[in-house]
Image (cartoon, rainbow, N blue to C red; front, top):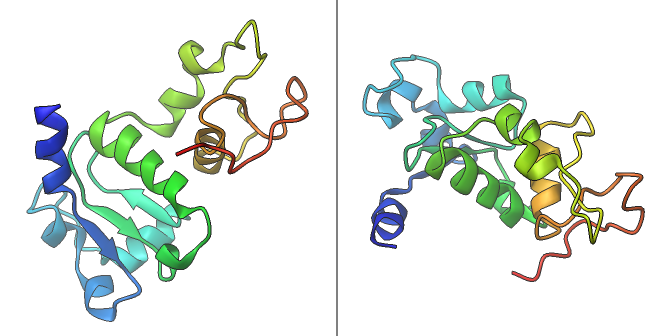
Length: 149
């Protein structure tokens, strides 16, 4: 718990809706750990993402698209970025192919099902308390954004 609390205090979020923040470079916000001169707005755009973590296994920076914080259900994407990428340091592909997540639960039949939407699939799966993936034919009643947290 102490490690989580320490990392939590080190999290850095960058909202590219702020023109000053959007012009910062990856090199600047990572303290040189990612020596890339691209600005945050362009980097995120190149990722084709609404949020992305620049350094895996480190507490940030997490870069947010303009207006991200005003989107409905943004908490599932934030938890995805923080928990899986910043804290655990794992890629989307590692999660999408892990038998731990993709093997159906014998009772509920729920699982992480790769529907080809990549990062969005993981966030949507997390929005069900990781019980099922909406769209999976094995769990036709699975609904997104039903997590109890």
